[in-house]
Image (cartoon, rainbow, N blue to C red; front, side):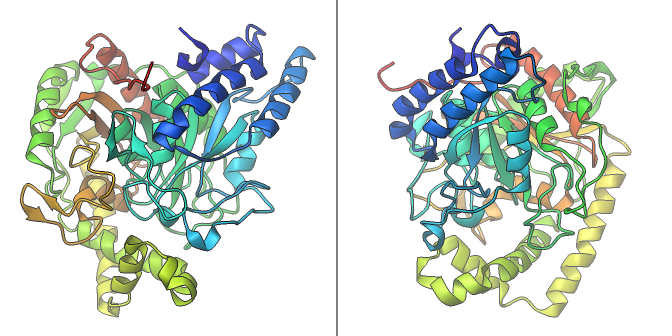
Length: 474
């Protein structure tokens, strides 16, 4: 197995045992980036000189026997929604095309402290609006399995980079599915954490279950490793809370026979395509016997789509007011439409949405009194054409908004539950298919342990294991 094919956890072990040098690891991934990125367009900015200097410094620390962090010597990609000191950060927007921050986001600071070697920034939708990673600054990030299709969004650059072995770990963010849709579309793994697990100082409204940052990787152990490095209790985020980050390290696979699982293809309302339903039903039939109790069930999330749209609108009213007033012509259609439709909300709309938001939380709490985990598809459709900003029609049904098609992820953003995305083979179109593994609030580590048990089970069935794309000409 080549260096770039090895997991982050294995690379860290080999680096700290002096079997591989941090520079040797970094150079292997740089070579892959230089070869694959022109084809995929996952990276927007690279910083190889700075990365090599950091790798040399890390090597000196290791050789001197000094303590090193959880991510010692691991190449890392940062999504272009996070501030990085001295490194171009555009948020996928022409408004910030030449923006160079003078500080790091808190989570970037954490990752540097843990020894990660930042090698560049990955592409995103403008301000994270939408599930197709394309923007007016850098263009589209294509799907590694079919370059005519999207990588998903808004963390599509990170997901594509991981799928193509350009980095072993990457950061992403999630408001309505931005960690989960690209992970599903590109056949990698992610954790949308419980709000507050990873502190975030730039959330537009501090007490808000959206605008989350999370880990993406190619194995569940690596998702756990990166999460441990990102998760800290910090006073800047009022939703942050104490946790033992060792819960995310050296994950033990759950005993699935002790688990009560509910399966749902659509959460009772999401416009899931007929093809995805068939694939989901096939996978459920093959794995349900692994669990102690398996049933078809879902919480009552019928109102989640409307609640999400109203609350999402408030976020855009807060974050995009100045951008819309001063740079309307530079904004993507998704951002403009979201802002304009939010202006039409009434106080009654808002009051209703906040009341129902509380009811949705209570419904999820009730549901997880009966089940340990809920499993549903990672996306309602197969990856769609890269030219389309969103899915407008599913099986002949027109979608009301640019986010309506993503109801499977939007609903779970609204409720604030932790969600692990796990690949499970391919769909009928030969594209990656995956699950969302959903648990009660603050059960992030438990969901990773369940996902690890499934990952091991899938590894024994070639048609269920994580699909791996090929590089043109290789």
